[in-house]
Image 1 (cartoon, helix red, strand yellow):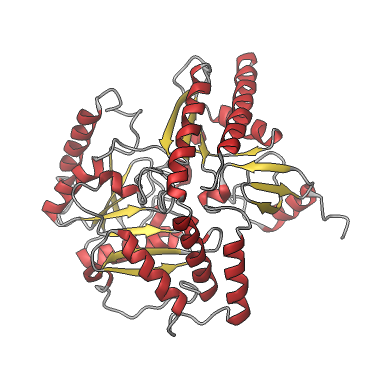
Image 2 (image 1 turned 60 degrees about the horizontal axis):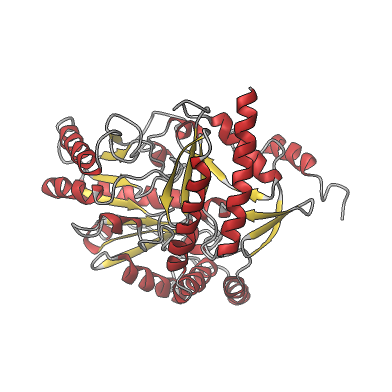
Length: 440
């Protein structure tokens, strides 16, 4: 090995010399993760961490899951790439499984390589089908990094430009405990957001294409509306013929525990017209996609292909991963172990001024941090806790408005013992951060 093989500082300097400045890195001393197993990862210096973020909710089942790595290796040994111009058995098989699971009648599936690209495709489909470039999006939303996705992002931290091919109107409802309706009961909150939606539709040119919404807002800090909000929105949208796109990039595949898809918490008036997915389905391989009713999916009047979407290797990974997830009832595990973890964290938070709220469901948990003794979001606290958790051997994410929320989303095979351990490490990190902020 060369002398730089275990030198994160040297690698960081090389990273800075060749990568864009806006490519965010966690930690003052960024980590190089070299291998993982189960719910643990190791860095280049040999430190072991309990992984409560899974590469942004992407290592969904486990690191080095034998079933997935075996499927990838075997497929790679046969053929790596063909493109969508040829029939692909793994692609058709995975599409059949996803169409059946989606809840969308007469579903068609198109595979992409990322959630950003899935968003882009859903916007293309909806705007073409409806012949309108008007989109309703939620405040505090995030749907990806591309030019079109940034145009529907309701979160200043992730919006580098206001230019967009779309005309976007932002609707209330994604953040339950802040904003003008926070003090209302769930029923009144939903009614107020529906009234806001109806009022918002008076500001348009008519014929809005779609509402896009994350059932639980991911980058937004794992915030969510009361169950049924999007079902209530659906009644208003249906009257106008407006499509509903559910962004399941982070909420899909049973992560929320209570449901297989996030939209099912809002399913009283039927499934969404389009559903986007990515992240966890490939357990780290780059898979994204869109499920839509046939009449919408088939509405594009021009040819299209996907060079890398539906690649034999990623499809083999997705099939093996989905099979493992269903056979081992990881949704049930997310509900049980996630429920325990949320309770444990709420008990911890009760004794700490630095924590405003522990929210979420299943293995998708947000912890919003404030300046102790105030209601003021504290990105400083989140940074302190992120670092302190790392020092103690725990990796978590952060996000939310102003970057003041911790995002906790371990692989869905998390054990009770690991949940307890992670909660203890986080409690220690939170106590340390509160003390530091108090001294400041």
